[in-house]
Length: 134
Image (cartoon, rainbow, N blue to C red; front, side, top):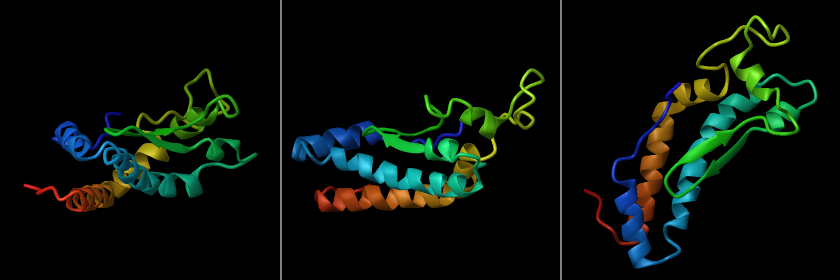
């Protein structure tokens, strides 16, 4: 379940941006949120809908160094069970799948495009800040 895309040097990149302008590192969040939307665009149409609460609980969030997708919460605590399934004690859910059906699958299917979009966004941000990419 370690579905991650790691950017080497993001911490140093963030420090350089902050040294130039305190608001520039905040734009890193926008790049990460943009990449997260690719995962959500895969998961949302495939997610089961009875009331719509579970699919409505899918949210992208990011810091300046990482992006996250949250699922479930108080209004739809059952949403992870819809994605990952349940065990023998949870027959109301489909069978358990370690990698999930929707969110992690969206990362897997879109990994190349996510990487490309993040690379392009970071390059654009660096060029806008007059930084040289090596």
